[in-house]
Image (cartoon, rainbow, N blue to C red; front, side, top):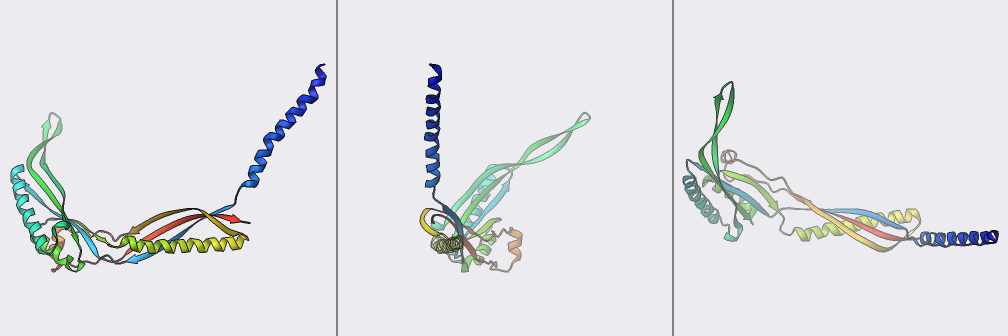
Length: 246
């Protein structure tokens, strides 16, 4: 009786293999060809505003004396900034700290030496960030700030106030660029572009390097301090995936 069951088992096994193989073959047929490309666009814009970081560093034998000196100098500095036409809304304290100053001394210790640190005074740092909406007065403002006691200029960052609007122009250019590439490749491959499956973007700008200037450098320049805003390049990268029609 046992041999009569062998053909049936072989038939069931073959049917099982066919059942499992058929869905995989059908899935391959259903796959859709796609094409994924990136395009680039950029525009240049002239900055029309600037952010200036400045401040006063004061030193004294005690923290109280250092703070008193710093407060007096910062009050005069902010008053001068306001006299230059900067509105209160565009003036913001950007950093404040009090820290000890140390002196190191080498003391003999048998055949060796060890370092001894001793507090010899205190230092107060107080900073202010100023938004300059009229670049024509930037040079004169820098000169006035230094003349009034600012001994720390952190840098100047130039800004394009309508950067988002200008970036939209770069986005349109990027889409036109990727579309032109896609149509070229599709024609060369003998296919047609179908519906768009996805769109993604990566955007940004390359700003001019901040102008770092020390008090001695700025005092050496003729008033007003010469500054150049240059240009900013706004870039957009767009990636699009299309279905392809055979």
